[in-house]
Length: 128
Image (cartoon, rainbow, N blue to C red; front, top):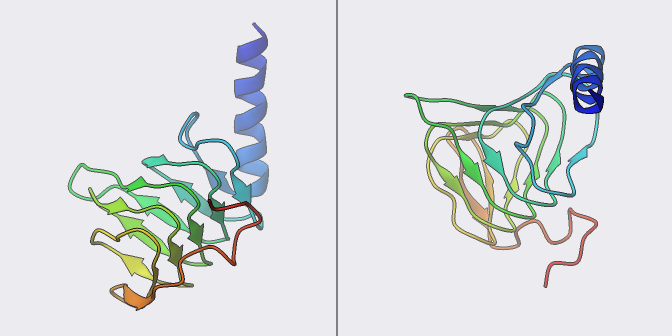
């Protein structure tokens, strides 16, 4: 009964703040930087920081798998059966439709690697 209450509370809050996130899609440490228009399909690791207007969506019946310690900038779009590595930073308004290796920063449409810094300075967690 308590789980049912929590589920309905979660649905109510998702409508209020404008996000669509299925239960158990994220590992521990999720950070939603701002409310509003966040849509998630797929599996996301721990310590993920997501900004507003992000869409993690299905493409050709497959959803992305996103690693740990990933920073996703405002307006980013990630879709399809792709893998995003650990410690990755995705720039604002990037469109990611191909695999991304660990420890890089991607940006652009379509997203390309622009740096080998990754998300270390963008997250408030220890990346060891």
